[in-house]
Image 1 (cartoon, protein in one colour):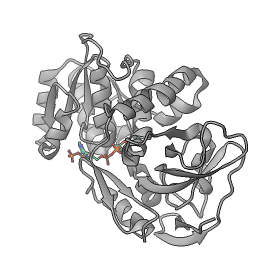
Image 2 (tube, rainbow, N blue to C red):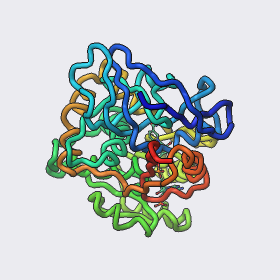
Image 3 (cartoon, rainbow, N blue to C red):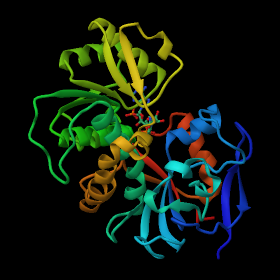
Image 4 (cartoon, rainbow, N blue to C red):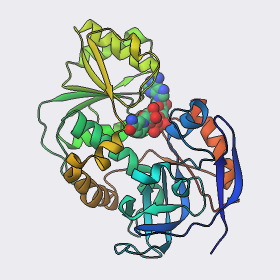
Length: 346
Ligand SMILES: NC(=O)c1ccc[n+]([C@@H]2O[C@H](COP(=O)([O-])OP(=O)(O)OC[C@H]3O[C@@H](n4cnc5c(N)ncnc54)[C@H](OP(=O)(O)O)[C@@H]3O)[C@@H](O)[C@H]2O)c1
């Protein structure tokens, strides 16, 4: 078995250090993956810098990755060595160092794998898997919007929604998902990501780099909305949507993240959020939606290429470059792209 290495976080707010770690053996229902693509998410940087969640140290961060199955544990019958897979670190894997994406040979739970055909790039698979689960849970489960057909677009249903932040990874997938489900979708983006967001099918893109008053005016002008989803989850966007609702006698919006200013929202404005992947994959009441997502919608949409992630930015330097990528998130340097590192590189 090859030597395993990880970018370890030894203490809260520490820097990542690349070290040799144990070579894990797969237990029942587990596989070892030769990790060839870490797909980064902003939450990993927030956990490192802000201690956003309570975790044990040393930690191996990283929620999504893709690669080739190296070995399988007892009872694994739907995957075999050599299969190309995308992995999300859901359920008991989320808090177990052996399953973290920032290592060369992580474990993965069989139930957290999606098999990719020979034509689907690893980056598409692991770049989309968890973010699209977030979208399904946020829009169809939490906000009660309809589900899209697989690999098709539903007829327009006469309803209009606002997705704030259509150039983010989650926002882009949310725009496309809602458009396919039959909604008219308005979204926001900086002008530099306009063409990317246009490909998602939004009916109108508002420039969110303009002064706040102009953004509010545009949002108002294109409303009213049957639902609002904030795909950015920043304090700035929370306050802006708070102002929008205040001017329209209150209401509810769903967001991707809590912020320190949530407590300052006007009393008649309700911001809701959830750890959306958990809603989809952990809550028994949503089992049917989980099965549809993992066994039908996701694999078929990836296979046809209908669902696509933001353009890949593949950073060289292997595990030694992971800290730099996390720093880029905190410095606000990730715009209209999904970042990957191949941990097998040196
Ligand atoms: N609750 C959950 O279950 C869950 C799951 C996944 C992600 N999240 C959260 O969702 C958020 C988005 O994640 P992601 O992976 O999609 O992020 P991402 O792809 O890294 O988002 C980057 C984009 O955010 C946009 N952006 C940044 N600041 C903005 C602002 N003030 N107004 C409008 N747009 C802004 C930028 O758009 P421009 O460059 O075009 O300006 C940039 O393209 C993060 O807060 C993440 O932690 C939550």
